[in-house]
Image (cartoon, rainbow, N blue to C red):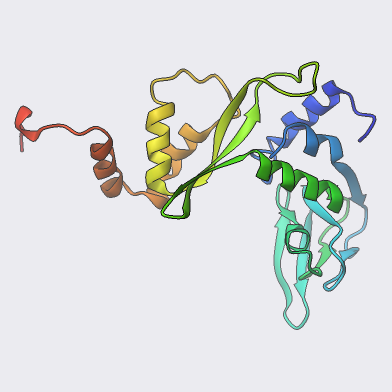
Amino acid sequence: PAERTDEDLEIIYEELLKIKACPTCPIRERPAGVLVFESHPKAGTVLFNQGDEGKSWFIILKGSVNVVIYGKGIVCSLHEGDDFGKLALVNDAPRAATIIMRENNCHFLRVDKDDFNNIIRDVEANTVRLKEHGQDVLLLQKIPTDGRGADGTHSHYKYMVMAGTPQKMLEHLLETRIDQRNDDATDTFLEDFLLTHVIFMPSHQLCPELMKQYPFRYSNYICFF
């Protein structure tokens, strides 16, 4: 990783965007710079055991694995694009399950613990939290849009939605996106919202929320039934 050029990092980052586990990588350079390729040729190989110290986070590039828990056996299988191993790193706890190769020739991307913790700290440092009544209602990720200057810092940023309440995400979308041209192919918030809002804000809830944002007088309109 230390020998990768800026061009190498850009190529790796573009490939990461295609992986289900990395639709929005937290810090553009860091994951691409610290990812290590790891492969296991034989099915049945144990990657780590339940109770082991958590040392890495893994993303499946090719193949599949079984997740095994003592006393329960195989509880699920993970496939290409899935990730695992974050829980032990985030909680600084032992592995909660055993991971076994489900097939031959499995390929992984690995981020080791120190690098993972550095990424998490960077994410937190670049996260903007909007609170109401003491609760987070919108999380925005601050992302540089230009190269580093002579002093090693960035001067231009954009903000991408990471999470939020349905109402606050809709409000942010209407305030910042509808009337602006956005050519950034990596920012799919508008498209994601339009495709998935029926899950967390069905149409019968969306319409009243839109009316709050764009109030009008009923007396000015004639309704036909």
